[in-house]
Length: 324
Ligand SMILES: [Zn+2]
Ligand SMILES: [Zn+2]
Image (cartoon, rainbow, N blue to C red):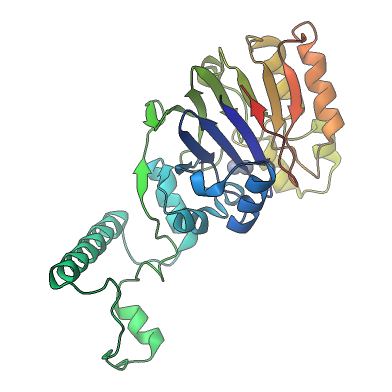
């Protein structure tokens, strides 16, 4: 059985657990680790059984709890290379190092750790000997830190493992097949996904300014569609956001309005999904009932008892797991 659990959706944090076969992955980690774990347990998912985290793009509402969660669980994180770079720049804006230098440093640190482990094993030492003879620091901590490359504990970008994928290239994590595709959004290299587990296809399409043909082509034959329905156009125009932010949201690399989502559901969508989950709803410029009504009107004629059940993902509590 495949389970799809939206833990949170919206500009304050996005995260979804997908489990299929023997594999469980987290798509985005936009809440704190503590809150992610709390919501997973609330939804009946055990955080300790997660196999990997996959990131759609580097915006804060998708990566907020990423490093802490990955470290706590000791699991790999999958990004596109450009998203990984952008995420690192966001965490360490003053880093005096190129990406290539950083990768080289990681390789060296891993080799050093391995060498230490090998030496300890040969000498039969315990893994972490007590630091009885540690030399006193030569310089104040701040100066030492400047001279030495950051250790895994000091480096905010340190992750247990980083795996890179590319939009347009399908890859697998355990029993789940992932097909990432490019979406129009103002991030370094944003992607949506089609995930397939046990023959069930699930589509992720949030954080996109509009739905271009390549995205439409991906969102076919899905059993579940997570679709952005970010704002009501009138509420956004008359709402509290500053003009520049309104322009950003409305732009071709911003967010999908209720009206644009409905236009897709009416004219671009194949009507196949058992579930449609409206997602990334704005708390300032939308109302759940408005989003629902607009989508329902568009689905009119497509809705049946068996297909196109419409759900709304929220910001403050997890949506009950959808079993497929
Ligand atoms: Zn977002
Ligand atoms: Zn975004």
